[in-house]
Length: 388
Ligand SMILES: Cc1cc2nc3c(=O)[nH]c(=O)nc-3n(C[C@H](O)[C@H](O)[C@H](O)COP(=O)(O)OP(=O)(O)OC[C@H]3O[C@@H](n4cnc5c(N)ncnc54)[C@H](O)[C@@H]3O)c2cc1C
Image (cartoon, rainbow, N blue to C red; front, side, top):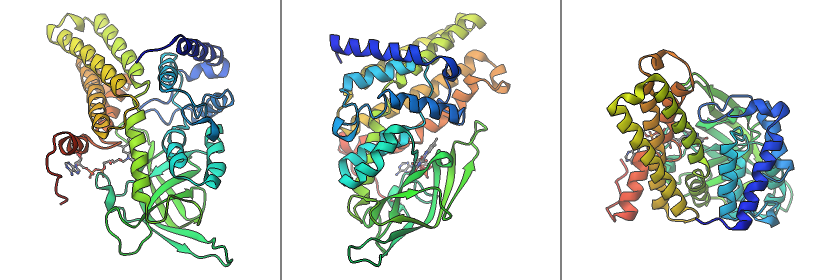
């Protein structure tokens, strides 16, 4: 990827804005809310996210006609790089802004665009993703949550979807206003057929959210119970029964764009670990030196592959990248434990958190095994795995 002089001007403007604004009440937010730290300073990060919105830094990739900035891919990379470099806090708007919005833009009606995109961009409505269920994770087509349409009285239709079922591992459901829910709307249908992609308000009597405590001791994801929860008939994205196609489009976004800027944070992690190894004397150990050098090489490979495949729509490449970065980050956590020695077992510091939380990275957004199945099938032409 090459950056033009105009891109470099854009970089300067991002950098200057972050420098001028990550000050005062927001200065303390540097580094907050990253992986495994989603619980941190939610209200303050919400206020920060709204400040970003007011300055036009949300909806960066959305086309201008949908209220976005229409930034080029190069500019998006620059924004995320500078954002991570400044240590700016993790944004609370990501699920709505980066997962739902591109799906809505592609599949939604003009009314849905008008209703849902502005509050996502302004960060006045937060979203969560209701896909996984106790019996449907990797095998998402086993979704069992049901929704039925109760017809309205009037001639023009109307009515409401009534949703019943359980979702699980729903990140940030406890702070979300809305959930995009994959539900079975055609009774008796199986697998990907007969599913619909519904937009359901979270704050209503039919929705119960129960936090799940994680290995890190915090709870950023939840169980979500829908018990006769309601949403207007028109809050279905795509045709009723065609939700699988819409859901897959969201997943493609999730697997593709997530990498932007991530590696800048990874670089900081690695630099900090190298500094810690120097300080503790661990850097003199030939085996640890070797592993640190390998980690450095690995990150170069992640960055090169990420930039090389950016903007492509080949699902195989997205799978390769997901495996590369998630495995790399996990190994870094393991290496940190080696560098810090036995003390790392008892201390509750950032390194331990990285070590523990990075276990999740080879699970969410499609597990390693699922990514390898995609590569085996699509890139190597091997037969599809049989469903058990
Ligand atoms: C931190 C975190 C946040 C998450 N946030 C959300 C969220 O906001 N919304 C949401 O809907 N979901 C979310 N998830 C859920 C995530 O999408 C699922 O955990 C994931 O899809 C795996 O499903 P599962 O946990 O049911 O595991 P399973 O599918 O039961 O898998 C168990 C093991 O079997 C392996 N396996 C399964 N099928 C195959 C196969 N065909 N071939 C080979 N191996 C296989 C898997 O790789 C895994 O190792 C989150 C998960 C995590 C960890």
